[in-house]
Image (cartoon, rainbow, N blue to C red; front, top):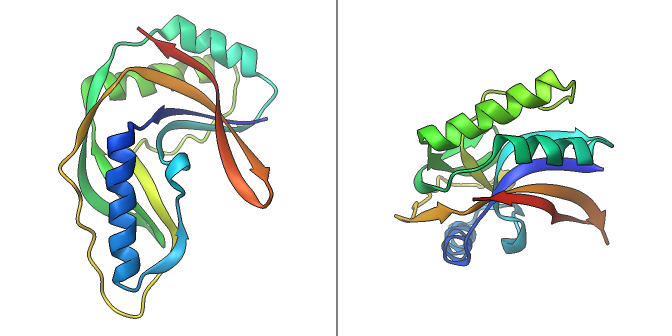
Length: 166
């Protein structure tokens, strides 16, 4: 099972990000845009594992305190375009604690430095310069989700398999 821990976005935030993607298309940008239903912020990518129950138990042990996230700037990792999320101590603390517990229990995960962001486009291509207008938005995070990623009919589908909330 291919798993990751994430923040699922509110509908208003997803709708605003879809508008950003429509604007990019109008500017002539091509690539693999993230479908609305797949918009999220990954906290830790775990990958293929059969340790779902153990991960759920760790998430329960860590607990969860609600916090706010705020969209900030646009950025990229190569041809991957993202919208940054202003970090805060509760967000960073949760990610640090989660990764510490995963490490202690021998559960492998992608150990890259955590950069809070929402991927909106992979394989970005454009024949001319373009700009990304980041909406001034924030949302209250009420739960953290353990998500499963699978392929269905040639598309990637994300499904929540577990969550923790206050």
